[in-house]
Image (cartoon, rainbow, N blue to C red; front, top):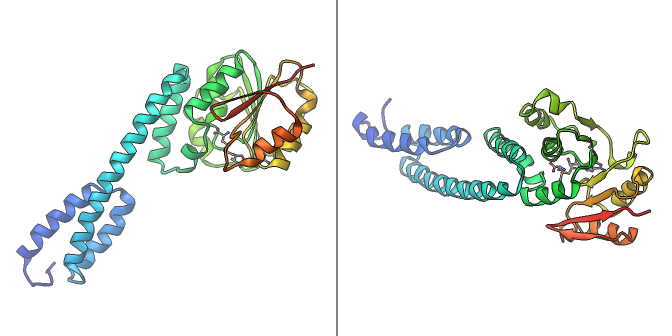
Length: 261
Ligand SMILES: C[S@@+](CC[C@H](N)C(=O)[O-])C[C@H]1O[C@@H](n2cnc3c(N)ncnc32)[C@H](O)[C@@H]1O
């Protein structure tokens, strides 16, 4: 393969630099960069491509540093969780990164909030979650108590969910039930729910309807926990709580209401 200058040797340093740059890129970017390098070797825009590749490498190093910082922050937050839950969250986080699943780390209940939820749940054995996502929270809830069952509703059955379910044992998996339905479809039997975790559409009207349909199975001492209370991005949650006239406490963005007689 000849360079634009017509010299084999002329290509050597550029090829080395290209390899060094490629080594620091992700597979996705490698494809794009190879395209660029290929054009450069054939003399389309060699200097421009080389500096582009080096720029890419710098961007990649910065991105890695950022990712490392995010990982360290995530790891330090895991200390608030029970060991089994922390281990699952860590494995799920690594798996999401490897599988380039950007949805789960963004949509899941973050560790500090999850710790508040688990502490509120206490020894409650029957829990309903509205808004499964990729099931990180549903899985964490069953891992935190070996006698607990979780029923989780979501109209969207996300294929990524199965990936995280493979991280738990069949025994733990049996204590999880997923319902492909909207949260406001309500209970399918009359069994009392110890804790209802609302993390679904975050829309005011949906949230009000969800509480109304689940009310019959909430008994004295049951908890209703709303995610993203007071979050300006989701004003519907707080508006629904106010409109329903529910009393309770807010902690880490979760609003906890205890049902009284
Ligand atoms: C923030 S994610 C849930 C994350 C999950 N609770 C966790 O911690 O991993 C919100 C989910 O709510 C679901 N959703 C939206 N509208 C819903 C509804 N009306 N009923 C139930 N789930 C709904 C979305 O499909 C999405 O998967």
